[in-house]
Image 1 (cartoon, rainbow, N blue to C red):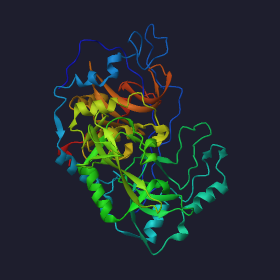
Image 2: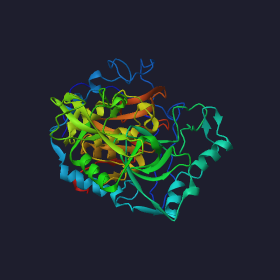
Image 3: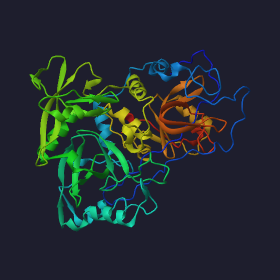
Image 4: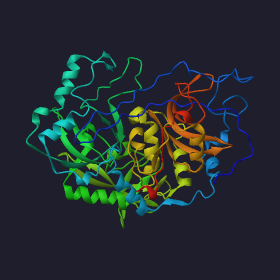
Length: 493
């Protein structure tokens, strides 16, 4: 149940326009991802609302609500929305229910979630070849590099670096962990690829950002040795081999259990680690929201420093032979971290989401930013819920129901029965429902740009709060465009 405050909101807030990451493919048989092209600023809604008197000024994302489409500064804070919920600290799923929910995700068609422990330890040449060709045999000839259109030589180099000649009848699967944050790519190449010469913010070869300590299946090396084809729980692609530390299966299994059961979860958007005399590279590591590190119990300290008022964790390190080394490190307890995961409550969910407010939009996690679906994924990850990566996959999770074809009033009525945290999906975009105020529904989302009702474009490239009554470039409101509401809940398992 929600309480309505006495203050009256003015007209619709700003619209949301966002490009989300591509859809990954199932490993067998693989299918090319369904690519959502980044949407560029359009002239505005096809049928804009009539302007209100005195509304000639350009809109602002936030302000004093003294002109059209402005919002109260209070609405930019989690506490505002938490105050509208009757029992924001009520636990919505227990740890056991969340574990069951995560396990159920791997069996959902189209969710693109894999139980890595269930993969075979060897892949046939046919299956591995199909995985190598998930994104095609080479980048499309219509793409652009920073220097201009991609050339035939560049395409041939990338094609050859996939190393198909090295396929054997049986190809062993190796096990490893990331030793730093990386961008997982469609191809074994760092070459940025754009859809047009004037869209350098959208590297279409950037699939997603993977975090330090991410468990990986290592499937195949590139011809130049600089890349591995890997599978994470939610994606397939290429990462630099220098960022992966390999280990035997038993060690991998043990550490995966530790990350789930005895981990330290990062709650801050970004958490730089302190320097270390015994591990000089540690100071360069920055942990992102949702990163989990194995905790060390009963430790006397790390780096010749006390464990008092600190958590002692293990950091993964790649040895000279490419295998995994474990290095102890200190994380002060007053940092924005928690042992285990946060309880799944509405208050925790809103506080985590609003920590990302104003953060840079980054297609596929580039620019150290968040795109629309990674925002949802990382917020839920801090509570131990491991969602799919992309918006099209997130709409298939247990607890999702289709609203395409429903009227606006029907969608609004459904939202009245939902708690904040529901993921509201529209084609190519994902938003996170934060609540209703005076009969109007609001979302937080990472977006490239927004429109007001007059068709005026605001270049956001950030995480913002906006009304569901705001417009997209097709002249329809967010509410009109919503296709599915996804609500992770125990009853959906």
